[in-house]
Length: 131
Image (cartoon, rainbow, N blue to C red; front, side):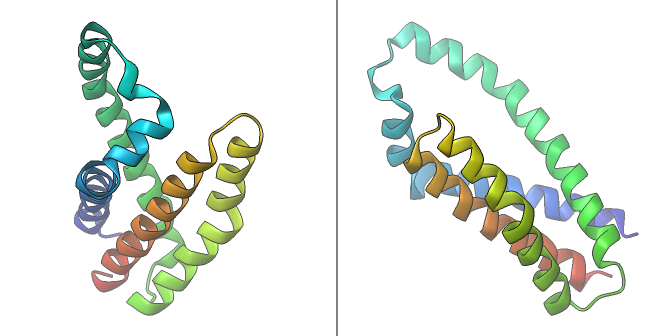
């Protein structure tokens, strides 16, 4: 197991998320979540909670890429990406769709599903390259 590759994949996932939900689709996401109408005090409270959310998301990314590294150990980057995409198709996409169908917002679903696809492809490529 290459723990540096796992760490790099987790960091890459955070960078992708920051770009995706920041300059690329941040305004769309904020509107879809209904946050544009929040008061200044509510926005400040949300910002205070973000540090904890980032930490937990990073830990979740480490776990995900550790498991993906185990599943793709010894594979080429292309094969690792294929496993990552199949994991996305078979596990991530159906779970996120279920969340959206049972009370979620479809705009948030589409943003999340494609963000997770790009994230898993990038992470799998990193893991496959450094095996």
